[in-house]
Length: 250
Ligand code: MN
Image (tube, rainbow, N blue to C red; front, side, top):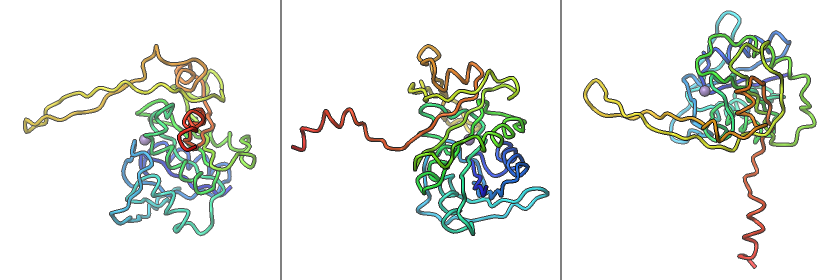
């Protein structure tokens, strides 16, 4: 398959490099267009008021294009301009850190896949429930091996598949579950710190409270050691409330 590979951790991230190697080993034609610098949690931002620069990363056993923009910029620029032929699949990751529940709204990784989906291509986001992974070849191999099993041609338009790996070696995973995403939001707080020149600054911290997590959804299943796969769609219309408000326009 011709695959566009991107991420939000940057073109030199462990997860992207592992996935590149695994996809190439499976015989795929892999085109990397990824942010030059880390773009975690930039969401679906696109660059409107600055130029996008493209830099070649030509290394032994790796070639990719780095873009001075966001993950969504990378996908837009790649498909519209940089790639000679359209991809058959857009893959984003492997992200350092899970993308479950509301992470989908903040995640550059998922947003890159979403951009691919919105442009009409099948899309897969891949994340790992660890913010400092050192080695992801097992997860990358699993993701590459999963591709032929996915019903890509049968997926509805604008569907994103969101794959998450638990924080353990992939051969020690409890299993594989297709599940909905958790709906619990993070409880956030800000650490107040002082910089070397005596000025205050703030650093966001947050967690999904364990007692609020519902069973059978991605967050809890990941914690229990399962690999999770959630199909996402981006019709934000609340159909129940649409009926409630229906009388307003009559
Ligand atoms: Mn990231």
